[in-house]
Length: 501
Image (cartoon, rainbow, N blue to C red):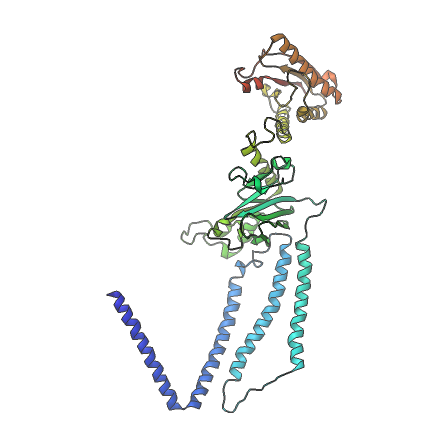
C-alpha cells in the first residue's frame, strides 16, 4: 500500500510540473516573444552574477576554514628537510593558477551579465588579433618557464641519491596485496641480497639469501620507525601489482613497481611527539578524537604519522596503512637493539640454515657485549655482591680436547684486554673447568692448560703477568648436570674471578 501511495505521489508531482510548464509557456506568449527573451536574459545573467558571488565566497571561506587541515598550512607543515621545497612549489603554482582562475571566472560571469541579450545588439567577430594572441600565449608560457625551471631544480635536489661517504639509514619497503614488509639492516648497516626463487611464506617472505652474511642481522618491522635528523634511504619495490609508498607528512611519494626497484631519500625533522605539540596549539585539534565520545582524548594526542598506499591496488587497499614513528636518535638505537633478526628468530639451526652448528660473528659480538656489561657491573664500586665478582666466560672457545684457543674467542678476549687497560689495578684469578667426560686427571691438566692459554693471550697483548693467577679445577666444580650435552657445555668453562681493582 505504501509503495502505491509513493508511486501515485510521484506521478502527481510530474503532472503538476507539466502543468506549470504549460502555464509558463502561455504567459510568455501573452507577453510577446521579444519581451520574454529580454526577461529570460536578465534573469539568467543576474543568476550568474549571484552564482559568481556564491562561488568566490565559498572558495574564500573554505580555504580559510579548512586551511589547518591542508598539508603545508597551519600545523601541517612538512616534517622533512625537503618538504618545504615541495610546499613552496605548490604555493607558487597555486598563486598563479588562482589569479588565472579569478580573472577568467570574474570576466566570464561579468560578460554574461554585461552582454546579455538586447534587441539589435550583435556580437563582434574577431578572426585574428596578433596582440591578443601574443598576450594570451606569452604570459602563460613565461609563467610555465618559471614553474618548470624551479621544479627542475627542486626535483634534482629532492630526488638525488646518496653519495659515497654519506651517513644514512637504509630501509627496504616491499609491497604486496595487501601489506608492507619493512626490512631494516642490523648492526652492519647493510641489507642482504634477495632472490624471488627463495621465497617461502612465513619463514622467508622476501626470499633472502641466507648465504649472504649481510642478511643474518636484518629484521622486519610492522611499523616504520625513523630517527629524527638522520638521512633515510628507502628502497621500494612490489611483488604483485603497482603500489605507492606515501608518507604525506614528509612529502614522500614514490611508486612501488614490480621488477623495477625505486627509492626515496629524506630526513625527518620532527618527532611524533613534537608534531603532536604543534597540533596542540590549534583549536581544530583540541576536539575529541572520537565524535561519538566527548570524553575521548583530543585529536592532537592521538595523532600519528602514517604510511599509506596511494594506488588503488585492490579491494584490501585500505589495509596497507602502517604506523610511522619518528623518535630521537637515542630512542631509535634502543629500539634497534631490541629487535631480533628474521634469521635468528626463524632460520637459525634449522635445515634451511647454511651455518647450522657454527658460531656466527653476530652471535659472538652479542655474547661479547653481554660479557662487557657483566664485567662493568662487577667492577662497579657500588656493587657489594661478591657473587658478581666471578664471571663465567662461556664465550671463550677451545679446539676439541685441546687448550688451543679458537679464533671465535677473540671477541671475548678483547673485552678482557680492554678491562685491564681501563683498570690499571685490576687483578684476577683465571680458573679452568671441564665436564666429567674422560679421565679426571687428564681433565684437571686440561683445565689448567686452558686457563694458562687465556693468561698467555693477555700477556701477549701487553697485560702484566703479575696481575693474573691461574688454576684448574677439572670436573670438580660443575655448575650444571653432566647428564645432558647442554649441561656439559656449561661445565666446560673459564671463570674470571676479580680479586681487586
